[in-house]
Length: 177
Image 1 (cartoon, rainbow, N blue to C red):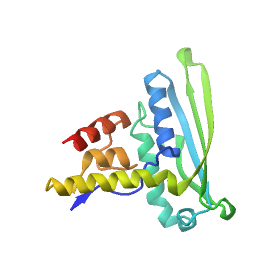
Image 2: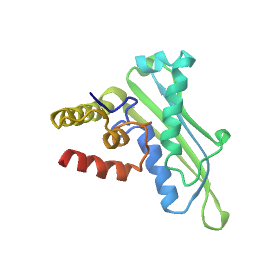
Image 3: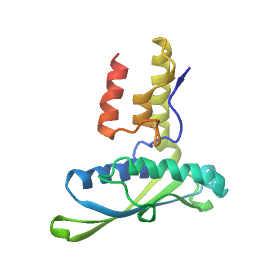
């Protein structure tokens, strides 16, 4: 049985955006000192995370997704990534706030703040369909077990992390055969 995993990187969600910005900081030589991602929503995913034991695994997968692309790992006190609260009237709308603080050339401080608002379910639906298609391809090829490349491309906390570009290229190779 092919396995890809769970906790999808949405089509254009908070974590994939946070990862892209973190990789941009690294590529442009900006030293990332600290960052957070705070998410609110009103769907059942956010409602379920009011149970703090369920929140722990979600926070870990989102944090590791960002930590995996930092130039150097941030201390635990300098990174907070995760669902923050359930706001019933938001319904399926997810609002994410990302803040990144760092230093430019010469130690000049800088910060970036971003607000992202998306309909949560449709934002993940296309990615879920693509993951299912990759599982079907694997079945057709007689392959089972963890599909490392699609897992790295579609999921936040795969068994092995790659940059999003590497994961994309490897998934294209997987699809192409």
